[in-house]
Image (spheres, rainbow, N blue to C red):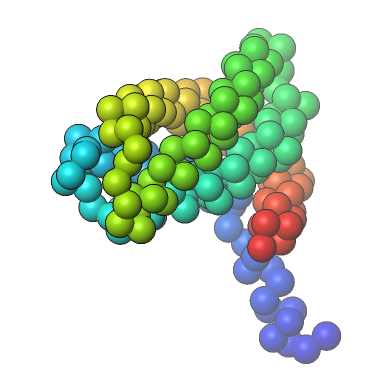
Length: 177
Ligand SMILES: [Fe+2]
Ligand SMILES: [Fe+2]
């Protein structure tokens, strides 16, 4: 193996995967703010480029993040948590929310894509309603993950768990790419 290859490999795993998840959450909060701006501007005052950006985040980034959590973070945390952490119920609930959010996200993404391409929404009021429902719920979702799940993960996951999580996340990106 060349030296370049040796020095490239660790950089993939070098970042703490929990920091990657935390920065995804920060980006998601910005996405929710963007969705609020779009909803406020409907039907005529919409930033079409913003619509296209949000559509792409909803379609690609969000499902990938949910895979990272459901196949990586949540099972590792479930295995490592102590009984007094009482984390099973909250993880179950968060995974449930992923399912319905994925469905709404792809519906909203379709409408935003049309807007991004210069079209008009078929039903601006319905789209506004869906956007508001989504970003209000999703902000809450991220809030609970940041308040409950992330601090516990930082406390409980071992170095080996983190390596497994990083590997899972890399694999998810390889499959998505
Ligand atoms: Fe989540
Ligand atoms: Fe999350």
